[in-house]
Length: 239
Image (cartoon, rainbow, N blue to C red; front, side, top):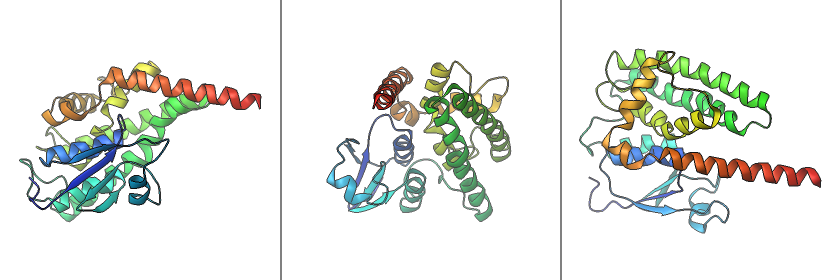
């Protein structure tokens, strides 16, 4: 647990997968925190003051000091609370293995996430199809990464959950929702058997069951946002 003098506040909003990443890290470390829901249309003074550059969630405020960007927050939690939690550290102790883990976290953010977003935010069916193509290519690459990093063990981190597991694990509900919306399997048991088994295993963790958004709820949320975007585009075309 955090020391008695530690105060943690998380600025977030359901069902952001990037907020979920931070919730997973906090849960794995067994840390107590205050969750402050944010209105992203009328952004709070606290959010604007805490993240003046990007003005986005999540933000973790530790004893009054804000830390921004989900991947950076997760690393910060691991370093600020090295002895918290029953499991091992999220980042490996070995410098090379730590660099490899950070590489794959960056790959998830730089390749997997943009392709995933394009699958349902693409303006045309062609753009969506291209997004799915790139997403499946990223899945194939991550299948190989899981094989290499896990060395036959359950997680990217080996026997225990590591930072790559948290980075990708925070997206599981959205991946499943995208499969429903797109009608295409992303973590396919035949094409990516290791990732498919990993996603099932990760989702069954106690901490994941507590913080991963309900898939049906995410599907409905995504449908609502897509409808709003379509309506806004139609209104803009009339002007």
